[in-house]
Image (cartoon, rainbow, N blue to C red; front, side):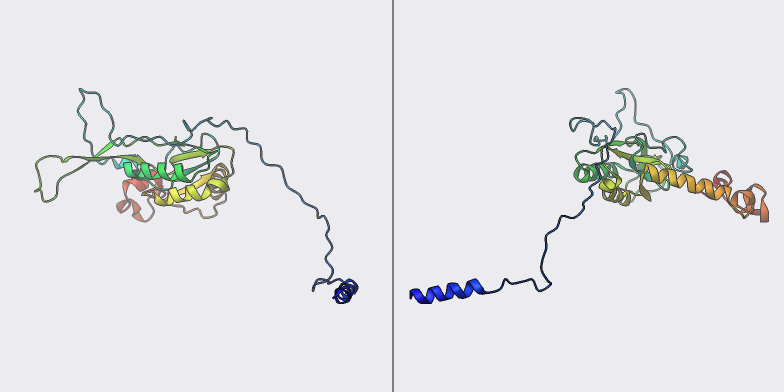
Length: 247
């Protein structure tokens, strides 16, 4: 018994070491480069107050002695470009409207819930549009024509093309909020786009480049201003203002 165990131990000791099938493995320290994180000179609110989107009222609050007013469609509130509220205040990220449209209370809640659930904790967001204020009237089903204007059904917020809907900022990169902002833009009732400040600057530069390096003299603006082909007989008055860029 003793001799057999001694023989087995002797045999095991003289066996050559097993090498890897791909050759002998040698451990070596490789060169690694980890760039330092970007330092953002941005102050964020210390708590959740001011970081998340606030709840917008479904119906505007009027003084007690004031009766809620009715109004027409006022399509001029949606036509044309936005000339004032088309910039990012914090020069970071946001969602802009590509065409005109209207936002109802449900759209405000959709934006608020999506941003509140999916944005990082270090991000802050703010509204860049007013709460629903324009009344939209509607008559009940099956009523005859006449009888005056219908009662107020709901309130909306008109938006022009280029208007900033929401703005997001904080010590973070665009890749961290891109997916959430694209989801918000996709759910809005009008075509919208998630943008950063660099993207807005590039869009403005592209428009400027197209106007300066255009080789075709017969642009839509030139045709409408000179009434070529008698186009004033069939174009709309809106085309005379915006030259086909906005409807």
